[in-house]
Amino acid sequence: MSQKILIVDDAKFMRVRCARILSEQGFDVIEAENGIQAVEKYQIESPDAVLMDISMPEMDGLNALRAIRELDPAARVAMLTAMGQQNVVIEAIKAGAKDFIVKPFEPERVLNSLGKLLM
Image (tube, rainbow, N blue to C red; front, side):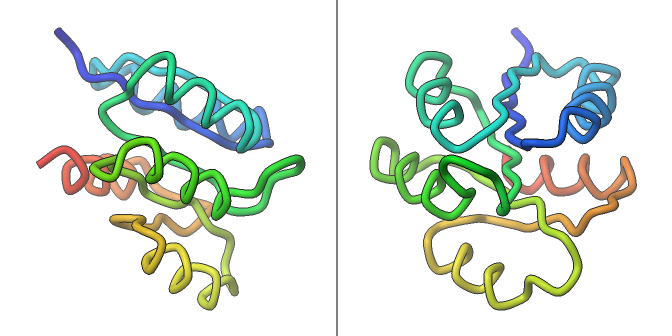
C-alpha cells in the first residue's frame, strides 16, 4: 500500500507541481487549498505526512499545523515557505513542524523532506 501525502497550498500550480513529483514516486496525493480544508482532510484521510504552505487565506498554515497536531500529536508535517519567512519557520518548528521547504523548490528537496518525515 502506498503512502498518503496531503499537500496544502492556496496556489493550485504549487499543488499540481508537488502532486506530480509525488505521484511519479508512487505516493497517493490528497490536496487542500487552505488550512480549514487541511484539518478536515487530515481527519478524514489520516495521511502519512503533510506538506503545508504557511501563507493561505481562511486559516494559515501555522494555525492548521496547531489544529492537526492537536488532533494527532504524532502528525508529520513539513512547511512550505517563501524566502524571508524565517521568523515564521521558527514558530512552525516550535509548533511541531518537522521540516520546512523553501519555495520555489527542487523535486529532490521535496523528496528528501518526505524521506525525513516518513522515517
